[in-house]
Length: 166
Image (cartoon, rainbow, N blue to C red):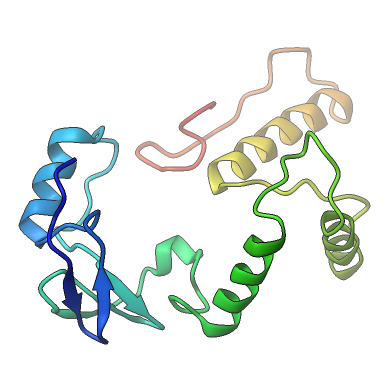
């Protein structure tokens, strides 16, 4: 990748050579090098804070989508940035192939708070929905007596969740 000049976007933040120099160049490069699995709006986020986002040219937008609710607390929330930075400096990632000292406390909190027996956290909504579909099938086989491999799962056409397995 050819280096790009450092630029400054609103708020005085330096943008590294890895950031697109313009909305047009970002969209063109993505079209050329990335698989076309979505049809995004022609807006490029270069920086964000709270509900505000700015494109490479400095145009301001309000983000009402919140990354499909992944940042419903707002972009770059100071307390979350602080906590993420502290955790990354201690232990960046531990897969479920190993135990870690934080996950059991999280699992206990979630199960007690929601009144569940156990929790199975997922990385994405697609994984969570697929797991829900598998649980629904298993329930149908065990509880309702549906013969094996005959459960039918209904889904909506052109809907995101469920399109990977159902």
